[in-house]
Image 1 (cartoon, rainbow, N blue to C red):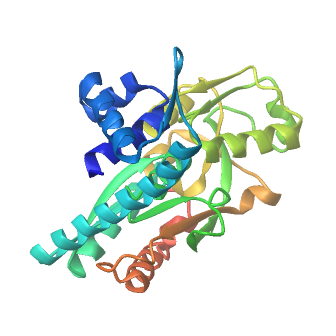
Image 2 (image 1 turned 45 degrees about the vertical axis):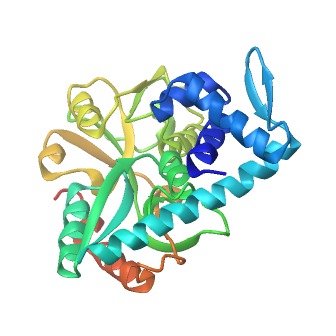
Length: 295
């Protein structure tokens, strides 16, 4: 069995389709099909249940899929270890949720440089980052709490406050039920953390939004709020001083004061001092600006 064959097989299982697997791997379909057949010939079993609407693993295919994931992860670890042995500076792949202020990223990169590390940052939403972490695409992720499982090594980094933001002229909100019928804006409907927080707000305030609009990014969300296009629920520390001057912030109470962000990191990387890395990240989240509006 070759790594390329295992990668092709895993990708077909995950996409459920040889065509999509070929697109993801930037290969022609015949190449993917050939690698799957080679595995089946080598193991003398049928690995995929091929249907007109796609593919799914057979019982034997499921066994191979689980082993293939481990083998591919080990291969990636091997490459990383060899790369580290060749280079004086270690690259640490870190995924971060998009709602955090930019100075967090700058601080991580700067402190990493001081320790001889190259911190390679990617921005995303909690679910996509967690999925990538489980596939060994990241060495660590900083995400909203409540989505990881007991198998992950977790460190609580921040417990902060969620606030309602509106245009400047909006009346002061004293009862969240007054938001019933409003247009709600969020950065991304794919962001499970934001979606969960909005659903809690809707349930607690018995709110039926006029509609929920996806803005695509936090800069667009903030500018839309300032223009009076709707209201939103955001992490207090995500509001910059410039944005603060253009919008109105409304404080909430109860569970909205306890939004948690956690670090998931690998404890099995031979090339990474996980304790040292965790201490470095935790120190960044001691920044007093995280407790205030504006930065």
